[in-house]
Image 1 (cartoon, rainbow, N blue to C red):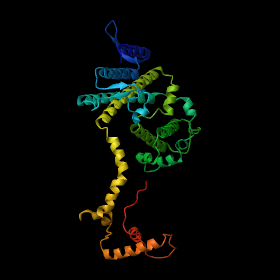
Image 2 (cartoon, rainbow, N blue to C red; image 1 turned 90 degrees about the vertical axis):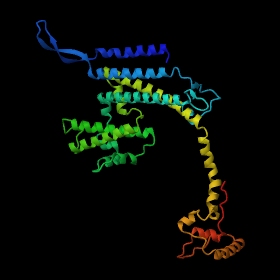
Image 3 (spheres, one colour; image 1 turned 60 degrees about the vertical axis):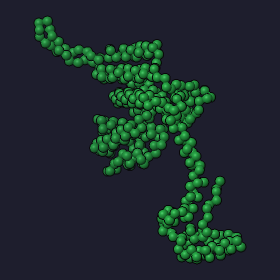
Image 4 (tube, one colour; image 1 turned 180 degrees about the vertical axis):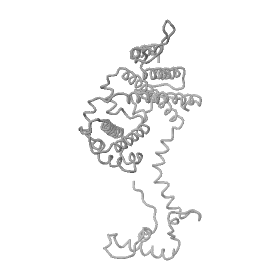
Length: 395
């Protein structure tokens, strides 16, 4: 980051946070009078959540800027334009076509640079986790807007659906078993599940806190059962948060941000989200460089896998079928299953000659439906058709 950009960044952050100096609360404090007596008066100080989180966010901001400054003197890797035709395209680069492609030396980065890059990645990852934690805390302290409440279903069962509601209300509840039974293959499905569970939690909390039991929120569910269901739903949300930390904000979070009227919460949420976004961008750029380094150090891995898959049916299959002619210690699948074909070789030879003559004189038609108790094995069918042969190529 250039000096002008850094100065502009810090100036704009100071403008954003300058309002928080006037968001205060009254606290009791002691004051000495002129005659030496002590009296209690109400003094003002910055609100507690702002007093705790703003210094932490400023420290995270400074750590990110220092991390960017550390890359100023490195000269082992550089970036090429995405439109450069000479730069080879990989699947990872095609997914991020708008980002410049990192280039490393032909033999990869040095060991010192690789360790230094891993240290920078760990530092940025810690900043990202801290910013995400502060953002989640601020969102949890925001009030739920009326627009979101009015759009909720009447009960938690309608929000979750019959299948999930049945599992969550069973006597023995396992959240991991519930998540494993659901389809969480895409980000959209994970977010949809999170929206349903958060809506059900809000419904159950409102029903427990409702003073009028005869209101439209009331139902025949006991207070203890609602508390149990809420606790189970909170457990599922916690598991989703740790298992999928990068999912987008839910409908509840978006509604809180959109209709929030607390200036302090708005500043904390926006500042933490900015740092979170910047840390994620820096982390992804570092991972791109590390990925380019791994490709430079191990270039033939992908090609070897493709070649091994293509050559497998040509080389490996004949070896398995020809292993009967190998050493006595080698075992085939037939030996392992106990199907010994060495017994009665003389009988098999005569049968093979007769079967070959029959096959040459008669066409192979579908046999008639004959009721018999004897089951013909796969090996016997091969013998009747002319003995063991290597299968012909399909392609």
